[in-house]
Image (cartoon, rainbow, N blue to C red; front, side, top):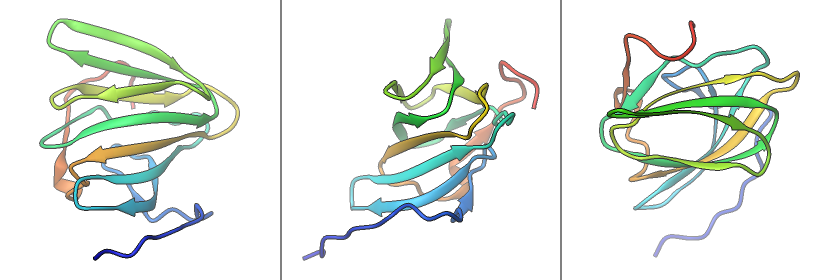
Length: 129
């Protein structure tokens, strides 16, 4: 039996994601993982897509935009506290901080994040990096 866990988000990040955002590990179970993500003021992520995982994002603080593409479907979504979104498998995406404080959100990933090789860097996104 796996023991239950509790955690407080750390001031220091645990890893830099392949897209350039700061990742603070929260929890992982057999079928999913959850992290706290921060994008600093003025930052733009590298555009990527995933090989095997899908994600759900929930924004906690800051202001930003998220670009998503699925085939011919394309959207730029304004991100602010209370907004949630999905990144289904195969979606191309990029995000940026448009505010004056860090953009903060929680990401649930299923299956759990397998490692740095998961993200495929795209040749182009919505915004220059």
